[in-house]
Length: 456
Image 1 (cartoon, rainbow, N blue to C red):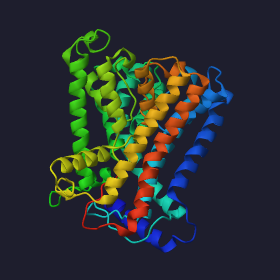
Image 2: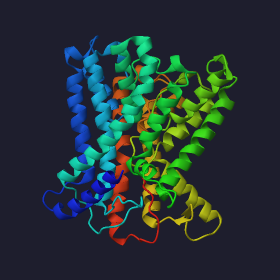
Image 3: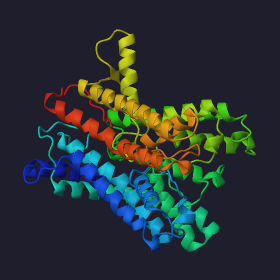
């Protein structure tokens, strides 16, 4: 971990020395990179050796977009449709999309004057808005190394489950594919029913959620956890993400259990209480933009669907592989609301004052997410023959890059597929882009005495 910290310091120094040699705007870098990945992925998935059953160009484009934006919505079943080569293409697209966003988040942080230090906090350096390609490559190496270590550790227990079931080659491939899919919050699986065959399996319901929760924490939070020492406090960003994740997971799991325990199409069909609790746990955590399911989403009650939509809208932690408005954004808005109710002047979280820039980021990201969800729901309600809740659920899932569906994705019209693809792309790049633009506009006037939470 000391090596990672030194690399972070070196990145900042390198950024200050070479920022004028080839300036690249991080948002443009992110958008261009994602577009290139999608187009290349589409071409590769359309090759005859990538499929076992023919697919159209639009289906290839939809699959590539879903993989790069790590959403998990599919118009064709991944396992039965694609060959091993095609599945490998999807795996690479998921890894590149998830780690690409995490790399961008760190680079945006550095370009706004942030620095990763041993004390797990960020210090303004005074240089803004430009990023050198060498910085991007070095940052990407650190992010990739950390991700590969986490994925490598998780691969072992999954292999102990799937190798006995499928044999060595297929079992290891299943383990690798689902490890990458989970860590990057992609939600792609090689089974048409996602993880429903493992509803009560302790290993699957532990390792898979651990992967997408850790991936959703983000690079800065993971470093903060690994670098924690009893002699100093955790960084405010680490506290908010961990506390928010715990609260949302426990409350979401309890609500799903209470709302679905009598539903004969979901929890009531499971043979034991432990199976019901495992299913409630996974379904409460997977809307954090992971997209896996062990219950039939289309059979859930309307109240449960609304709970899942709220969790999908919130999403994961900032700087991670997940999307949504992010946990920190939610708690910043809740803190501001509580401050207003109490007639106080400045909102605080864990005794830290929240600065104006963070509040503006939270408001901007949330307002745009609300408008995007509304516009997507409106558009799909025009093009698709489905009830409003199903359409709204699909729009929320697409914009949050979650991947959960009540069955509408496979029945989308051509226009509907285009709308969902656009929502997946916007939902992936927009939150961090907005946070970066707001942060860059106010970076020079940032009050260093107030805590800035990572938003977007």
